[in-house]
Length: 452
Image 1: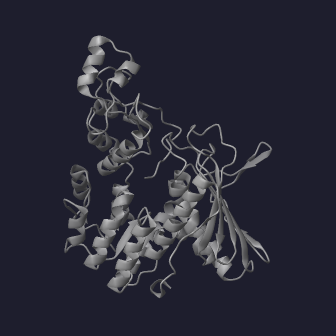
Image 2: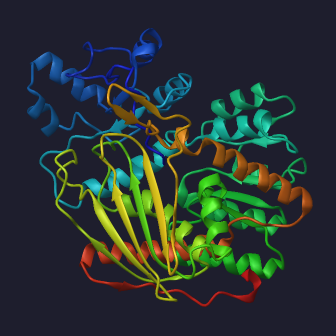
Image 3: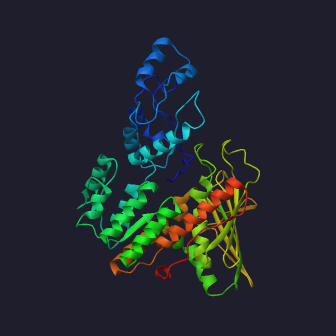
């Protein structure tokens, strides 16, 4: 789930009901509609209506209300999360969304399962899933394809998308889309843990499938996809590692392949985000950010990552107390190239992606993607992108267009199931290294000739 930061021009507006709402008994949907131009941050809480009535009638404090269970797990309370998400989706704006449930007192093992279920539920509601943007790009930005059918956990949302695209059907499930005779190829942008079942279904149906990263959350699930694809006898899967389609990274790849810097020895990377919400945890710099560097380093070098260490430097004061930020990943390839990746998700100043390869006879690095440089008043400046959309919009379009072209040519060319498996294996090793503080060997099977 991508977590865009709010634009600077927007003010915050809270849309929760309860003792601390914008107004007692406030209507969240009404607030969103009335103040749509002011919303850049949303804080969702679910309140038990019965306990809420006790709070108001007895004049209870917030602490006493929490003890009585006023805060509940979605979708058991008010406001209706699905309705809130649907209304927010209509704003067509980048939003910070934090979902919170106050639990006190409670046992230490209680919150995590609730958080996992809540994330799953809200993903089904469409929170954090860029469905309409994918379909809009296929319909209006790219050539050679049209959207034949759509499905979403929110059936009203799917119906609205279908109405906006001529000749498009809204079907009841992803499996119905995959099985439809009107569908030649499939795009999967659902919640990560659902990717495996949809990709396997597409393989069984013999249909090419583009799957947003991750291919699946764990290496064993990715291996099942690899094995199914090999059993099918041809490549059908492409994974959404879009940096391979960025002009800058493609120029780096050409320089390395052409021997411009000699044999690569070192790779230096930085992945900096301006800010992340308080719900961002210490595993997410690995699973949500560094996975890009894991894939792009493998691609640039033509080599697998063999071991990884994760260092925890001094924490920034801008990170939540539970978040280790920044983090430094040290990766070693099978050929002995060392890769360092700085992941700093609260850098404050912008979305800054860097990559430099050091070879035996020279270096090559990404240039600043800014279209202009400003000089004046005794200084020179180049703007830094605000977020991933600004930095990589062109790469996303190129990625999907080349996938469409490959489907039409019946020749898969992009990141494969094996690439998805390899990154999942490196990510798993990095999480182990983060927890243990020790260098961790990446456990992987040998690459089959099928993916040579």
